[in-house]
Structure formats: structure tokens, C-alpha cells
View 1: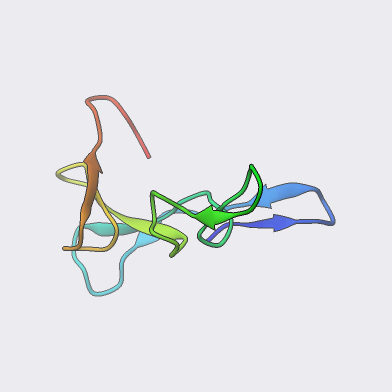
View 2: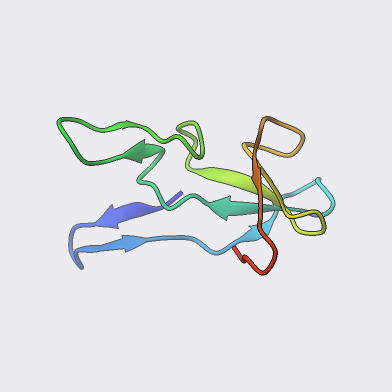
Length: 82
């Protein structure tokens, strides 16, 4: 789950890692700030990760989901990478 480092004034994101106990699935940092999207009047829950801060990627099929076996977000297009 990424966060804002106020000292360096940069967003910190985490690398994609295997999802423990779920063969073929990987945990991907959403890039939002702790499950929140900023901008406008106030922060709101992120649409991509549903406020969790990360989502699941099935490498073989290219499917993105909120979590392994959970609600599907979309499928990667041919040539698109994480």
C-alpha cells in the first residue's frame, strides 16, 4: 500500500510480490494513498482497490481482481504490463 513521504515529497510504492498461499497470483500496489484517492474537496475511497491499497494479478491469464478469486477489475490488454 503506497503512501506519501512528506520528508522527500514523493510517493512511495511497494514492489509486486507473490500472494502467499495463492499459486499464480501476485499482490500489486495500487498506487493510491492507503486506499484513498486525493483531489477535489476531500479524499474518497479508491475505485481500483476498493480502499484496500492493493489488488491481485493473475500472471498467466492477465486478470486483475480485488483479491484472488474476488470481484474482477479487468483483464490486461495484449502487451500491457503491470
